[in-house]
Length: 115
Image (tube, rainbow, N blue to C red; front, side, top):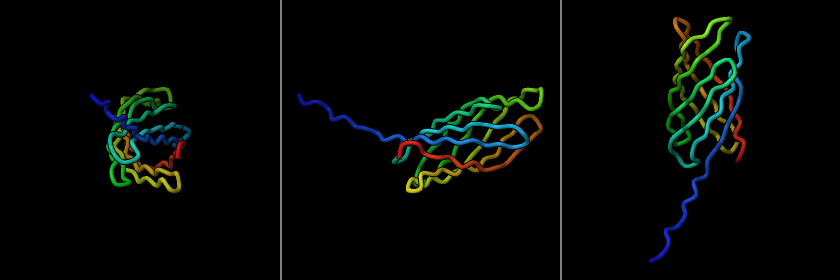
């Protein structure tokens, strides 16, 4: 009986910071180079997780967590889309986040760390 070949999936890691009105969120994502599931995290003034799909140089997904604004804490949700440019080692995410009655849209540039 022959051994099964080992399949190595090249993972891409990207991270960056988004700042607005004195608040900063650190964004980190990981996804397979040739497509598949996106996993990520938010830290800083918002703590949470991101999930999604990477296909054909595009990302799409959602996330949830808890955000601190001023002296208050709110449950938050996020939807995002993104473009991946592995040649330039950049990922641009456009997002819409909602916490209570507050909604914010923006973009964050991430740098890949292993290409």
